[in-house]
Amino acid sequence: MDYQSTRSSIKASPVEAVLKGLAPDGGLFVYPQIRDLDFDWRSCVTKDFRSQSAMILSALLPGFGDESSIIEDSYRDKFGNDDIAPTVRAGSLYITELFHGPTSAFKDVALSVLPRLISHGKEMTGSSSETVILTATSGDTGKAALEGFSNVPGTRIIVFYPSEGVSAVQKAQMVTSSAENVEVCAVKGNFDDCQTGVKKAFTTIPQDLLDSLGKELSSANSINIGRLVPQIAYYFSSYSHLLAEGAIDLGDGIDFTVPTGNFGDILAGYYAKLLGLPIDTLVCASNSNSILTDFLHTGVYDTHREFLRTTSPSMDILVSSNLERLLYHSSGNDPEYVSALMTSLSNNGSYIISPEMLSAINRTFRGYHASEKEVADTIGSVWKEHHYLIDPHTAVAWCCAGKYLSENGSGRKMVVLSTASPFKFPRAVLEALGHDGSSDDFSLLDELSRVSGQQIPENLASLRTALVLHEDIVSPEGIRDYVISKLKNWSKNI
Ligand SMILES: *Cc1c(COP(=O)(O)O)cnc(C)c1O
Image (cartoon, rainbow, N blue to C red):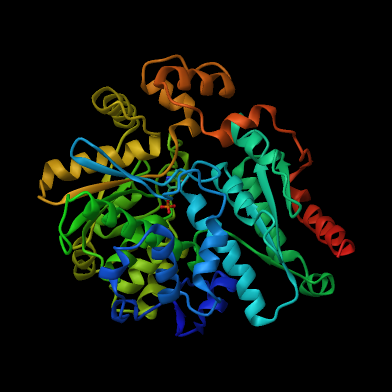
């Protein structure tokens, strides 16, 4: 089974694709024949989440060893609920909750599996070097990656965060990380400074230095196919829940609304559909950074616009990397076409697809967006009507699901993916409920707990008393040397 770059005929085995992350030509790895896989989706929807995950892994990423034990190791002791992705109902909508992991956000699901794949993949290839993950974070990804890589053999991780750019809770989540193989460092600057510094470390640390220290550098962001595939399982899991509840019969089509940033989560839904799961429509929900909504309406992807900061920061993005994979699959697997679009994106900041391709994409994907006011109103009205508390990312999706349904009024069931616990964003949620959000983060957590009558998730509640273990701080120019000094230190301890 060969993966292939979206931009050329470069091929890679599943293991190579995961270990490399990005193809050497800058493209993303895809499996061109995914539609033709003989995947028994009917059997998959009768299984529990872990078995579904193992079945999907063995179909799409074979060659890493025993899939069931990889999945068991990935999720063991990490998810508070036995059910990793429970589905609940509020009125006529179904909500699949993806935030019961160690950092209360949906990235935990895939970031629990990817490190195991890297670790097993290295065993398979006989690589003896240690993989060091470098990550710049604006807040959420950092902690999810720290948890995911925590004590995974053969891996280490260094996370850089902007010293003034993250919330007190986010900072506390990171600097209290206690695993042996993790480092966390503040950067004097903003997120862009962090990202630029990390990119520079990737491109300027000499290969012979890495070789002599027995290290390889890698990244954990969502363009890695090993982060995408584990997410396919929760679409199957939602379908199973609806079946078990008697809401649908086997074979009935259902719709999903997905709060979207980098287009990874929603693309996993498309892959579930290509594997046979009866998904009719995927509603792509955006916040006021509505570039994807415009693209899905016009076929024009245009980054010439203002970057807006919203209450759903994990969806504040102008370039959604994984869209490239959808372009590949809906162009009839045409790497030349995709490559031309991506060249246009990097040269002109925009591209335009053909009307035929847009209508092919629109057969599954529909785009809607929610303004900041609509997000706050949705948090308020969902709480009032259903006594159900949602975070701003989920509220974006909820609002967009409503817009889609009022325009299209399908007879199908609609599932909204809920991607973060409301307790991760206590200020925005309290303000949406009409409360004062001006005190510090930890007081706001207590206040939200009091107002909602719900307990603060344990991983957030325990932060208040957790020991601070990481106090390093560097300038953006110092990131590269910081990485080198850590690499040298770690080599001494082997
Ligand atoms: C990352 C993230 C998203 C967006 O997911 P993509 O796969 O990047 O589209 C939505 N909600 C939350 C809470 C996230 O952390």
